[in-house]
Amino acid sequence: MRHLKFTAKKPTLMTLLSLAAGALIGCVGEIDDNEYDDESDGYQFAVLTQPQWTFCANQGQRCAFGGTKQVRYGKDGRVTTRSFTNGVNCTNRAFGVRYGTGNKCEVLLDVAVDAGTAPKPDAGTLPTTDAGVADAGHMHTADAGAPMTGMGPYINNSAIPKGDVGVSVAEIRSTTEQPNANQDVGAFRTSCLFSHMNYDDAIVFPGQPGKAHLHAYFGNTGANASSTAESLRSSGNSTCRGGIANRSSYWVPAVIDKNGTPIRPEAAQFYYKTGYAGIAPSAVQVFPQGLRIIAGNAKASTKQDNGGYWGCETYVGHTGNIPTCPATDKVVMFVHFPQCWNGKDLDSADHKSHMAYPSGGRCPSTHPVAIPEISFNIYYKVPAGSSSKDWRLSSDMYAPSIPGGFSAHGDWFEGWERPVAESFVKNCLQPSSDCHSHLLGDGRMIYNSRETY
Image (cartoon, rainbow, N blue to C red; front, side):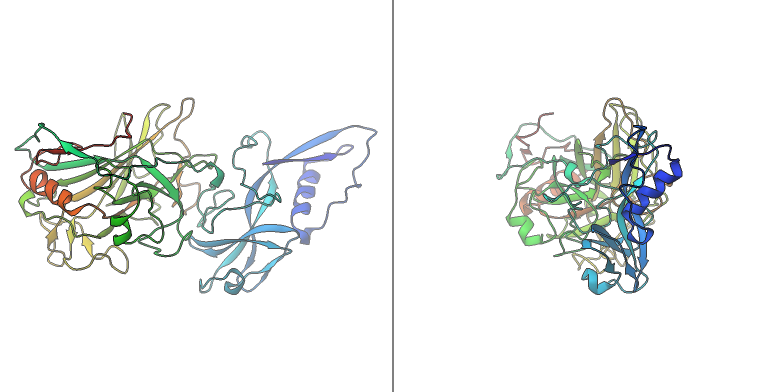
């Protein structure tokens, strides 16, 4: 946000708004610096402005403006952002993409706002280059600007938090502690520290860095758009208990506060369970190496039937959108994954068809192989003096008048050391034992030397 200062005799509010707009859009006209330059009255006004995406042209038209500005091109959540000087043709060729037809261009402009409702000056500012030109940082749907339908929330890229560096060794040791046997369900959990954020998705957009909405990652510290089953198993530190015995990658859309700041996840628990939905624990098999699964609907704008939901730590609930949790409480994102595999494909064209949820107490005939039910619990602490009201997900591409969080989803890319995965499935899940968040059920336990809680 910036202040535009004008010196004038007695300008009206409409005059000031017109001046601000005229300075930004070339077709409206230029501001004459001398038009209101009467120093005798000494009467000054400060007009608050903030960046906002403004429609410029439909595909095939010219998006005209003066100077160098950020322009984004696309539709329905698929958007590319570029910097241009003195206008640009609103075409696939100009933006170097193949987005088909029906696209539009929007330009990032400084628009006058009411000083009484404007955010603090530092909130929502864009990172800039050395030349002072706004730099959106990545080509994606939410590089900058106010939330708009199909464009996602404003994200301040300069405020993306740092994650944990993880460890480069397997962290497994002997223990005399035993699992709780004879439970109704089999349970193994692991906790992972937040690793990093990026605009990649190795499942949906493999080999296309910067293509996705902003994600928060846990587990393998090297996970990015180029990650493969082999690269995850053989490289990268791990922020999970067990160290590099679990180089799996877990990721979810980033949570964004009302000022555009990505919120650093405080904690994360990842569950592998059996005995739910009528499937016998003894029937569950270890998951295949390199399996990829997505749960939840990234395009949802209402409560989902399967996949993602929300709660507060002090009261879980089961809301489809981000609840308003009080200060110092934690918002919790829950994501439940399908556990029935078709037995042959590690992925599918839509990244979902190779998996299915149980029905009628069994896996469908098309997906006969039962694997552990995976679920994510991601925790976000509400800062003192605030609440989670107006928080959104980076994947919320719907109108800002609709509460945030309906697009909750998660991605899991398997990267376990095979003997370790086989151990907790055999010794914890199949016999319906509770191995808590560290036991492997064979006289060993996993740990994380970097955990402080």
